[in-house]
Image (cartoon, rainbow, N blue to C red; front, side, top):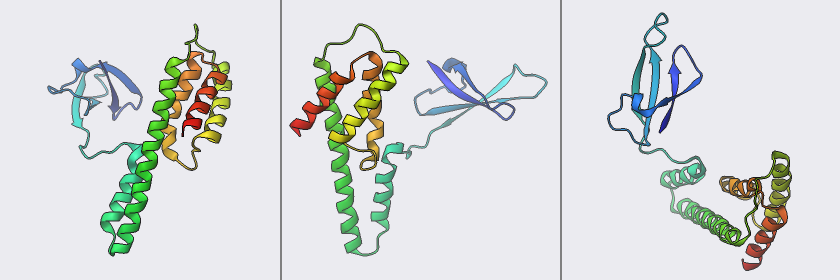
Length: 179
């Protein structure tokens, strides 16, 4: 497994090193390893210092929900709390609806015949442009649901694998008719 580290303070470029080269005796996905040089004259010798990510860190897609939750906790009167709780409930329902919609698209795409070769970058970009317009008109717009950006990579990967825009749009239409 490769651990990405940052050289501090003399270099700012990223460097790949094997996780076995790190001083952490308890390596896990929550560890971050920072490397610093001991001196300018000895560029080969490194000091490894490992830190753990905070346990209370939240994914970036959940920051608006977390902020709203904090506003609920800070609200002084019950009317504000109730209103904010309703908004939070609606946002959670929307997030679940987006997730369910993308799962349906993935299930339908599983039944589509997989192409023999990957698409070129030009074909991929043309495909994703057409697919994204269809997705916006039939499912969700980014302006209405910013959390959809986390799922757009799925549609991009289908285009990249060589699926035609027509096949992907057909699946989007099937999902739209079901909802």
